[in-house]
Length: 619
Image 1 (cartoon, one colour):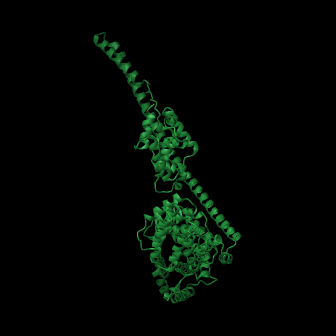
Image 2: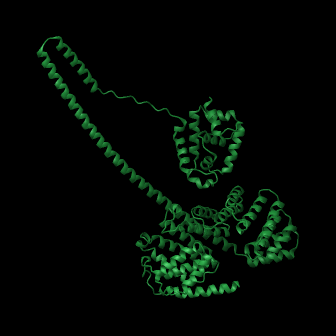
């Protein structure tokens, strides 16, 4: 039945390829997206539906290919159609049967990207996104043909296209005209890169999975997207023997599990069982959990995958009889080359320890016949790593360019603000000067009038009335002299405090800006980390304001290490464990454990900030 369906799919794709095929001599840019007709709108509807229901969309595409609209496709629409065909085949687990046409499509959309009005005008979103998708599907085609390095290059090219034209894609939100597919596409691409590096046992997979996680939070790729990414990170950290991080991401993955009758749940459950064994929780509890998953397996292939994990645990525990039972079944029945190879390696080791040379030779021959040249493998890993490092360098240069542009914008904005403030200040100074000159003229006029009045009164009479007038005149002069006095108020010096120290203000600004979360990996906050000089400056500030705070603390509690004293200075600022984790670049669990240790040393259950403040103020 499945074969008949596949044949039907291939035949229908062949029909679409014939009807959508672009003539070899067609000019690259005969039609722009602004000239789209009803055929393009039909393709857009298929595209929109594909992101929600890829299974049913394939049938819709078949119906479109058989309709009269397919006969009227222009150059742009034909390439758009080929891209959708390749995506639908991929999303429905079929091989890329329109490979030649897709390569032409990649070239066509690359040519669109060379026309400024097409990547900067109203059709910017469409053209950029289609070009990135074309490179992504080209990478899928390379990967299907085992060209891993070429596939990696195409995935990275797709990322760079989007990030070049949409530098803030991680903050992009959907509109009624442009759905929020860009973050989802980025999550899928980074996830695909993570799988590629994962299969090559490269630590670059961790970086890619974390980037995919950021975008998946904005726009989930699927109901199980978060579980898959978090569990993949847990598996990677487990592989590289970072058990604390592995346990953290496994625990995070469990928070997103909503369906226990799903392969994602069963994979995570089995992964947790294996991790529990390595965390020292015993062989049998882990094996019992895996046997439970064996009973829940939906097919033979899944069952053998669980057998491989059980066999691995028994092998590590040197329970070789039990390991043989499971590993032999995996070797004889499993199609997955990696698991089959791993089973053969363990079986060969077991029989070698037992002196069974016949069995050793059997599995050694299998490994020799299926071995990939170590030189070839190392060369491939080297090429992949070089490509990825070039991409990271490109990201750093782009980020630096963006920072410089932002700095220029801030500088220009500051120049404008300062210019306005200077102009306003000049205007105010001019107005104040005019007012002062007017006051001086008025005062001079009043003084002259007073003098004239005094002269007239002297000529008038020598009566007591004249004397009183003279007294009033003197009082008036005294008032005038007081009015033109220059007395200036004294400025009061501002007293400094510990929190006003530059290093303290710097730390609090980073805490306010970072809004650090306990559940996030501290590596995400590397830009906020404190250097050794900054930590030393904080200690000096604490000693200066609190009478040799760290010296008194070390003397009062000899068990405190130098690192403990640094943490005490941070808690003296009132920081939380999450803040300290980000600033000191230590795992949150490690910081939390240290804070519990410090409370034990101080013999207090109060918050460390309160305990240390009381100690600091007690001299």
